[in-house]
Every structure is written in C-alpha cells, then in structure tokens.
Length: 267
Length: 305
Image (tube, rainbow over all chains, first blue to last red; front, side, top):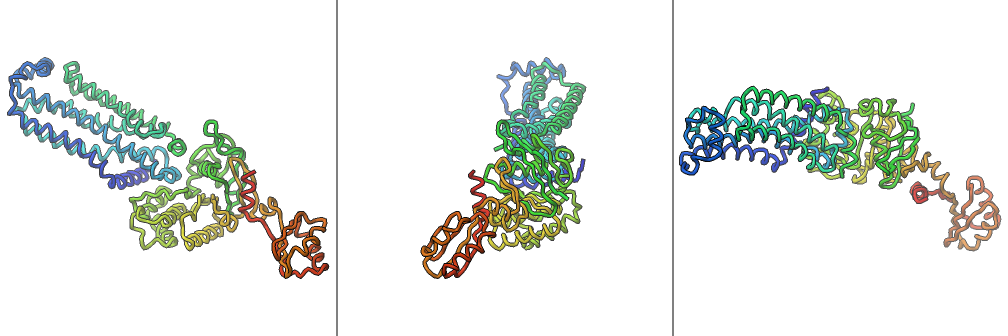
C-alpha cells in the first residue's frame, strides 16, 4: 500500500470539504450544542427546586446502582443524570458525523462525475477507501476531541461536588470516549463507503451504517437504568470487541467494494 | 506491435448486452476512431479497455497486458479523457494536475515538470492557480486533456476531445493528437465529429453494440458508398444525358442544370470511356469531378441499416 497516495486523497477530500460550509457547520454545531447545553444546565442546577425530584425513578436507580451515590443530594444526583446523558453524546457524535462526510464524499464524487478519472488511476481499492475513511474520520474526531475537552473542563468546573464529575467523567466513559467511539466511527465510515458502492442511494448506505451506533446506545442506556454496571474492565472489553469489528469491516469493505458498480449503476 | 487486441469482448448489464462480441486489433502509434450513436456501448468498451469494468465474456490485451490480469499495469499504461472534464472544481488546474500526476506514481518533481509543460502547451499557464470551477468549458476540457497526458501513457482514450472548444483550440488539439501519434502514442478516439474522425483516424470502427464496419476512412467510403462522377458542361446538361444513359456501365444519370451526376460501379475504370463518349458526341465538357460519399453519409447508412 502506498501511504503517499492515501495522504494525497485525504488532502484532496479536505480541500473539497472546505467549500461545503453547511456540512462543516453540521460537524461543529452538534458538538457545540452538546458541550454548552450541559454546562449551562449544570450552572443553572443550583436554582433547581428539589421537591419534585426527590423521589424520581432515575435518582433511585442511580443510588441503587452505585452505593457511593447514596449520600449525595438530589441536586448532585440531578447533575449526574444530566451530565451522563450528555456524556453519551460524545460517544455517539464521532460515529454519526463521519458517516455524513463519507456518504457526502462518495455522492459528491458521483454527482461531479469525478470518480471515473480517479478510478482510472493505478490507485488500489485499499488506498482509495482508506483515504476516504481517514478524511471523513479525522475532522469529526478532532472536533469531538476538542469539544470533549471543553465538556470535561466545564463539568469539572460546575459540578457541585467531586463525586458528581467523577461519576459523569468515569474512567469507563473516558475509555469509551477515547477508544471505542473512534473504532465504532471507523466501522461506520468503512461501512458507509462500502455500502455506497452497492446501493443506488448513498443515503441508504448512511442509514444502514448508522446501526453500528446501537451497541453504544444499549451499553450506555443499560448503565443509566442500572442493568449494566459500566466498569473500566467492561469498557476495555467493549473496546476490544469494537476493534475486532472495525478490522473485519475494513477487510470486508476493501474485499467487496465494487469499483465498477459505482460507475455503472448510480444515476 | 499491437496496442489493443480484443477477442469476442462482451459486456452485459442484466438482460442488456451493451457490447457484443467485439474483436479488433489496433496498431501501436495509430489513431483509431470509434464511432457510434449515443448508447451504442462506446463508453462501456472504453471502460473495459481501461480496466475500469470487467468484461462478461471474451478477452483483450491492452498495452501488452491481459485484461483482468494486471489492471494496475493497464491503468498505468493508459490515459483517459472522459465525456465530461470531471475535474475537482475547487482545486486549481495546477493542483488537479499535481494530484493526478502523483496518483499516477510520478514523483513530486516530475509531476510539477509535466504539469508546467502541459499547462503551457494548453495555453493555461497564466491561469493555472485559479480554481477550475471558474474556467470556461473549453478551458476545463484542456485541463482534462492535460491530465490524461500527464503520465505520458502508451494509449490514450479520448472521448470527444474537441467538444466545447473554439475552432482555434479544436485545431490545436487535433494537431496535438497528430503529434502524439507521431511520438508513438496510440489514440482511441470516440467522437461524433465525423469530419474530425475522417481527417485524423488511420482506422475507423462503426459500432452499435456490435461492430458494423472496420476499415480505413477511404476504404469505408469506397466500400459502402455508391461512387459517382460530376460532369459540368457549358450547355444545359439535359441535351447530353441520353448519351451517358446509353453507356452499358452507367447505373444512373441525374441532370441538374449544367451538371450531369453519373453513377457507375467502378468510376476509376469507366470514366475514360464515359468522358470519351460525351466528347465524341460533342458535349462541351468543362470539369470532371469525382464524387465520393463522405464518411458521414457512409456512417448514417450503416447505422440506419
């Protein structure tokens, strides 16, 4: 494999993306909202009335799932509920955003009819797919990383007690945020690019690829309702599983990417 | 040496046979014209020969490499100008060429040298750093042509290379195509411009899913066209038409004011006798002009069979 070609394709994709303002705004706006909104809610939490929340189902579940939370006030538990819900978004966003870029990069090539000269070059399918996957992944991961750091700083600054931010920003969450989300994002992107060569409508590919978000949803939802206790060990096992799936998906994508279907079938 | 050899090349899309049993040989260093109506399967043929899509049946060798065997080597050996320029419009002409030069395995230095050379050749040097999106159709076509030439391929597939170009630019491109042939490149030219094909090509194929005819332009006109002779007289032609009609080899005589248009099976053989007979009868002959069918007429007749 020629990494120089991969890098050339990545740079080309980014140059093309620079002009797509709507797409760029989409990439930035969601992490921005999911960063600022929880920080705002955390700041405003000191003014919450507690009378209606004292016996809420979620606070009871939280206390049942983690005995250390039993001594926390209702306001602190409220902050944890808000924080955990938004922390989940930082696991999902890097999975969704690159799929949008990947689908766009394929459909963009097709509508501008630039794909044929590209496929006519001695560029291998692996180089082509890797270039497109990296180009789609990097902006979303960088964006998610930057806003994730702001989120962490904001949660730490606004949490009513250390126990609150330690629960929201648990080591299990950090493992999933730093390792599992990028791997699932890679799976989703590889799947989007691959499916784009097999279906008539790239949006279908994007939707099909987005099912890979489901395991993360299930895991985090399980934790929120107390079915799953998300320990660092479980998070690491999840990461290993995600890495295996990402590797298999990449291999499948390269093996079954249909260069000619993309030229002859799409109209 | 043959640049392209195909044997029974066939491509099906479901029930549709786009290319059926195509067998042809194209010599290295020649210009091959591939003519046919829209939807005839010309693009599919080019895509197969450029290793972009696989044939359903048959075999081919392109630049000495077997189709389906070493696609990467075939892609290195051919350049392709697609029907539309298909450039990255946000990139400048320079960036487009450098990108493709490097994708064709040229070093950065060589890609830059070639890009400079071809941009100057295409009269685009002054605007090479502007985004291609701001270029006229003709300018984009020239950038796309430069891109196809950049890795100096053995075989060039050109789909309507002069489409959208002004007469001067089209003239220059035709000159460039002839120069490329002189330099030993093989040109596979797909065009609807039959005059261009007639002027440029060494060999022409008329194609509609199947090969209808394959020959040199002059042989095609000779083989498939009735051949006539135009005789211009000083007196009204009707006076002398009976003389011509009475000759055994004359198939048809058409009278038009001062002109007789005479059709025979072999004008090269029959014209001396024809002219002698008319002169002997006292016909005031001013000019004798051979009438050959144009490639366009031959093409239209063959395609409409």
